[in-house]
Length: 427
Image 1 (cartoon, rainbow, N blue to C red):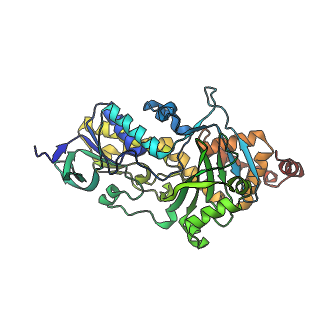
Image 2: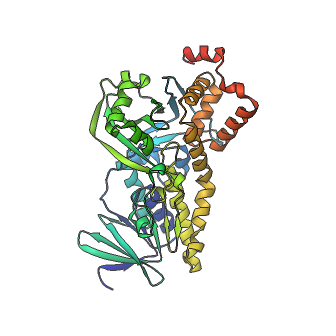
Image 3: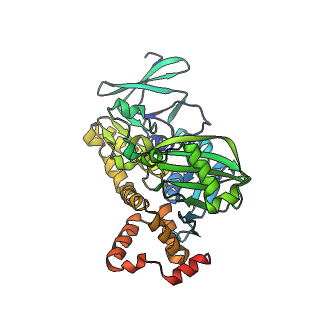
């Protein structure tokens, strides 16, 4: 065989969380997997760095544990939410079914992604770093994938291709897909800061400006006295603001009441990095003849929070399982691979669709102010609100509750004097 040509059962393009998850489960089941990663680890990835609570069990199943990061990250145990009028509340979500406290991890992607890629390697996947996907063409009932590494042009023949190559997915383009329209696209910008006062074990989310809703700013502790601070905003609101992302980030730090005083002495380490957020409301196809898309390449970013790690892990695992079934049956058609879409929708589809509806509600500053006031006056509401945000409670229950209260208990949405008093007192 030509030294510049090889073969595998599956080629995974991209070694982020979705690609590494897919490669891990494929290799663990005995499939021959080649994973192409255009960079060399460790490499950075612009992100809020938050692996929320519903991701942890999947990571644990991959053999990835918080202690593996050797102190380069932070465990968080709850959240804080701020509203446009300056109010805030903080709480832990309800305990998990086994009684444990729900935890999230904030681990810089410089460290996080490499650990997941090594987990795929440990399971038996072949990781080719500094190997850039170039094209894919039908070949012998499968695909011939062309890529380039330091030695030049190469190819690998396979039966299935899994595109896990992010928001600007070259695999998706090869399959005939365009990038998301502005209606289904957001942008985020983050930097790492030192000198931020008052960091705790809470993930902080601030809906700080009615002009940019449902966009928000965040402060996530990353350990060693550092914080990942950023903003996320939809394209429409960004255009209407007539500001650049860096200006909006500076506004968030300088004008948000619960943030400004704490960040007076803060200093950014390195530079701010931005990235696109292809949200799931685009309903992008994820299954093709002999190919599947996962994570950001599949446009599976949560419309409410902008989170993508959980859906990348879920879809990477479902793609692996579908590929294994198809390879065993000798049928890698779109119909045979549709199990991928059925599985990720069964696990994360309700989370994403309810996120889309909640995102639309979050466009109302008045409603956000009221929710924060209610939560600040009630431990029960506060805990459940954080649970919905961190993925420990089914968001669809939140939507049903809002609808039922709007129909049968509209007075719930009218602030009471008792609530106002508690809110003014901070609790």
